[in-house]
Image 1 (cartoon, rainbow, N blue to C red):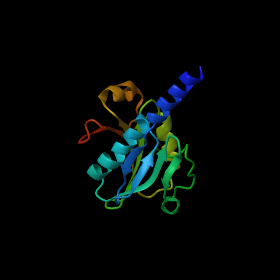
Image 2 (image 1 turned 30 degrees about the vertical axis):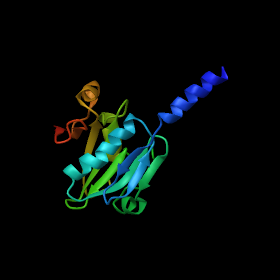
Image 3 (image 1 turned 45 degrees about the vertical axis):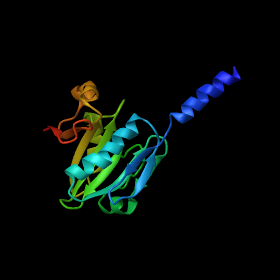
Image 4 (image 1 turned 60 degrees about the vertical axis):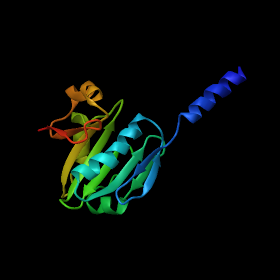
Length: 170
């Protein structure tokens, strides 16, 4: 019995390698393993440099560690007061070139920006003077298809496997 448990435990530990992410500015971080954090890696390394002219990462959550990066001073300055992990999107970025805030949800098995989440995020950002863009990021079209019926208007979708395009729900 004990040998079987040890074997299962060692396989579990081996499969939990961290996800290495290079954030804007060149610093490297480790996210816990998993598909959700692989999507976050793609958001940071592919989406931000492609669609933001001067990206600044303001917040990055992690499925296990919860908060990896948070620029509380800047977020408070622009009107974001309630900075609880469960209220924040997975990735919060700022394009300092065109003064736009990006609220990005990495969707693997739950939580795209549906109408309820959209209203929560609008309330959360209601004191912010900058333009707000909300993005649901998916690994691929198959995963996107599962959630597409529930996505809110006035949001966008980005697919990690087709990184050059954005789908707008306007």
